Image 1 (cartoon, helix red, strand yellow):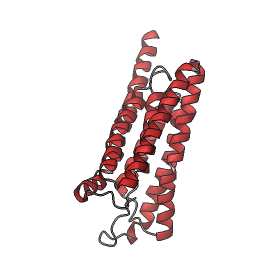
Image 2: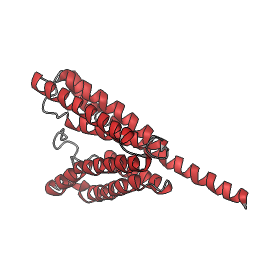
Image 3: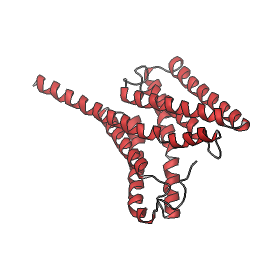
Image 4: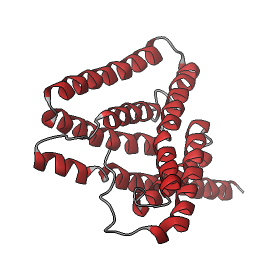
Length: 234
């Protein structure tokens, strides 16, 4: 009986790591998706009409979620830590490139926002480590990470609204929609397997939004033409 329990536990851990690794790989698709935009910025030596705010916000979100994955906050969710640290590296590079090629006014604003994000994260770390005890720390950082992730769903909601209004999936690439859905469902399963409310709730919401995007794509894809209009770049 004891051997059966150990075997069951090992299988459970393998499943947890498997869905976590899948989520990490799928997240990489999302992290590299802005590369064409930044290639254009580098080529034209200008940020044009692009906004650097999503980079800053995503960086702060990744840092907070990565911090939550550390043993000093939670029970040590290595997959949460790795995926968000990789995301933080990508977003940092994007933010630096934006600052380099932005005009003076935009550069000053982006520098201020970047310093503000770093200060906000440092404040979260300081308060959680020096003010909160172990249990309160997990709740404090966990709720911050959930709030940050849920607020980031404003982007999919904007795209969903745009698709419904234009009756076209031109602004909603299928690959990104599918990767978002698969990544969300992977971390939703990871959160369930790890019994972590702060992981499966926001990713459950992301999974639902991913399903909505895929259904909209299936419904409106017949109206999409590759040569119609240039993709929306924000």
